[in-house]
Length: 481
Image (cartoon, rainbow, N blue to C red):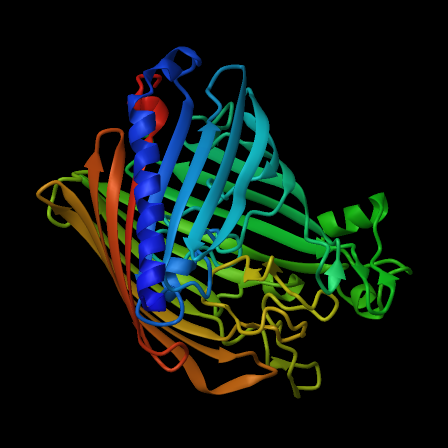
């Protein structure tokens, strides 16, 4: 038997095994009496991905918290996700645990999420590894994803306190709300700057009319890498309470910091300004959103409007209509606050070099993947470099969605070009064009999904991939919810 036939037989065995597990839980009704809360979920997913090239298509891998394995073009996967969302009571709790196994002759198992937390009076305290779910002002599944605060890499372990969604101001509750988060996290040990810390915070506001047909949302996210030890030079970055305050306020470093950090800000800072305007007319809502990138104080005021993304989303509340979703998104990150004019009128070349840093040479990445959108290419994950992440991007995406005979479809065309960095340009620019079509059908307490993606361009060449996936909430299946 050929190697391909042997692998195919193994994949079929894994697929049948996953199907048998679903059927077993379907018939196991005694679990309904073991939990008394309607908020618990136990999601079982199983799927198959098959590709024509040597890798999974680009966007099947991207923005998916590394659930699929890079370099494994054909794979069976099964995952289990047990979680509970905190309620609106004065005191409640939440938790989540998600593990996945990928099979293709070899087996890889991995924990994606593992967290616990408490809810109290509109606030959440969470400890562990959790996917980002509430820090965006716009629907990111339709475009390229959040530029620097997305779910492309695995979740980073951290402790976070945040509001439980939007919170109304006591005296202006009819028209003004806010939402915020504050967290401290830990990067991995085996990187150029080993054991560095993560600092994240965000604050957004929402102003809306009394009838809520017009709404303006705006705010700021701030991220920083700090601390850690350079194992090669045997040097440590400053830590402690005073340096944490400097990170918190994006202030320059003290005498124990590097010369660069004493002149600029301690650590590696990056963030976004987020804007979103919404108008609702009848069954339709129109959103116009903007996300501006910044890396230091020069990008904060005025807005670094040349670098970031802009998008328009049109959605209908009638989910049964033939067309109920349209999205157009455009990204441009070529300026990077470069080509400044000095006091003497002479141009100064000082680009920001988004997501990269001279001290933290693995950049804005975690476990070998860019934390933000995959449009920022990481060509050599194992190599440390001040230009490691390729950040000069021009891209646009067009997405159309709707309903056909009870089946939800989504079609997207994405065109991405990446020119390297301002310091190390790539010629010709790397290009990836993608046509993606997805179809999902609801089943009892779950769904079945089919997705096809065709990529072409000079970066990865031609690749066609198919994905089949079904998902069932086993607790709902047994009457717990």
